[in-house]
Amino acid sequence: MPSTIGIGVAGNFTGHLEQAGEASDFRNVSTDHAAAPKGIFPFYVPGGGQHFLNTMPVSATSLALGSKTENHQIEPEVALLCRIQYAEKRVASLTPLYAMAHNDCSIRRPGALKISEKKNWGPETKGTSNQMISLDRFEKGGILDDYRVACFLLRDGVLVEYGLDSSVTGYSYYGTRLVDWLIEKMNNQQDQGPLEHIAHWLDVASQPDYALISIGATRYTDFGENTFLKSGDVASVILYDAKQHTQDAIRGFADGSKDTNEPGLSVLRQNVHLGSQR
Image (cartoon, rainbow, N blue to C red; front, side, top):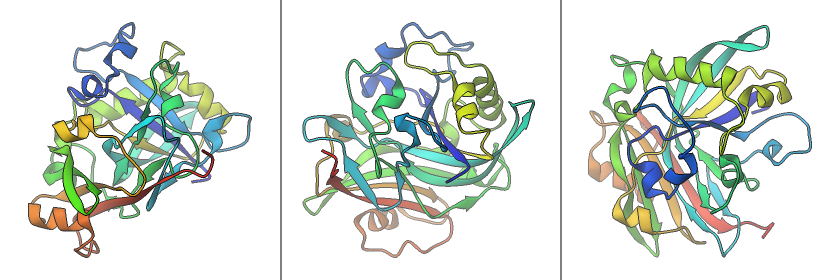
C-alpha cells in the first residue's frame, strides 16, 4: 500500500461505541446530525517521518496482540478501497472501487488521547481480506445491497458468533451520504479530543492516490462484547452476498472447513498470536 492511506470511521453503527466503552471519549465532539458518525481517524500513513502510523499494520492472515495485559477486540467492518482526486491539495472526489471484509482490531486502552493510539501498535495489527468485491456503485441499488457482515471467534476448536450478523446498508451513513461526509472530514476535520487533523496526514503522505477506509464496526453479540482475544484464537470477518451463501456456509468459511474461493464473498481469517515486540 505505498500510495494508500488507512482511515477509519468512528461511530457509524448504532450502539457500537457504547458496547466498546468508547462513547464517553466523544462527549465533547459535536456532529451536524444525530445519526452522523463521530469522525475519522488514521490507522496507516505511508511515507517517511518519525511517527508510529508509518508502520504497515494490515495482514490478511495474522493478528499480533500488543501485550498480554491489554484487552484486544475484533472490530468487524467493511473496508472500501477508494481513489482520491485532489484540487489544490484538498480532496475533490473519493471513488469507492472495491469492498473487503476488514478487522479494525482495537486495544481497549483507557486514557488514550487519540483513537489512532488504539489502532496501530505494529505489523499485523489490522486485517483486510485479499478477496476484493468490485463495486458497480456505492449506493442503495448497487451490488452491496444484498451483502452482510458476519464475525466469529474460533477458540479451542469451538466457533462462536462474535459480531451480530448485519446488513451493509444498515450503516448510519452509507453511499453518497457517507462519501460526501468523508470528503468534508478529510478536508476540514480538526484536532479535537480523540480526533485528528486528517488534512495534515494527507500532506505527510504526499497526497496519496488511494485510501483504504474502514466504514465502521458493527455491533457485538454478548459474547463478543465481553470476550477479548488471546494467542491461539482464529478471528474471522466475512462479507457475503446473502442471496448466494447460507448461514451454514458462513460458519464453514469461519471455521476453515469450507473453501472460500467462491463469488459473492470476502473472507478474512486471522490467526492470533502475541506480537514479538511485546
